[in-house]
Image (cartoon, rainbow, N blue to C red):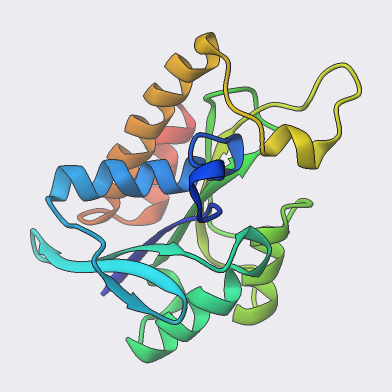
Amino acid sequence: MKIIVGLGNPGKQYEATRHNIGFHVIDELANRFKLPLTQSKFNGMYGISHIGTEKVMLLKPLTYMNLSGECIVPMMDYFEVDDDDLVVIYDDLDLQVGKLRLRQKGSAGGHNGIKSIIQHLGTQEFNRIRIGIDRPANGMKVPDYVLSKFSDDERMEMETAVKKSADACEDWLSKSFLEVMNKYNGA
């Protein structure tokens, strides 16, 4: 089984914020695959289906961003999923708005959700799709910025980024992550 995880925070007040872009990609995939996230386990909402020849889980951890690993790792253990069969989608301050960067390993880079996953997984080696949200301007504090909403201009770029991220996830179901990485990092 492959697990596609989108990071975010649960609750209406966080829905359209920068920090929830991972949830938006999961929503896009759930729509495409006609796979509602109606099941709950380990403080996460998920759905499982066969997509082509792959068994796939779409997962939204409901632990709040900073504790994402507390949901993901027990889910992987329960369903006996290897680290190679995990992809995590999340926001990145160090990329310009809407830019994608796929990686197979790396540090948390200051992202507390990724820090939690690394801590619980015991490795930095897992697939990830980072979606750029840019850095705050005018001295705005990072926590306030990541919990703010996108401007109208940014929203259009982010809709494209969400679709591209979902495309990359779909490609991963039939190709190696390295192939997908090469395709989307060059785009």
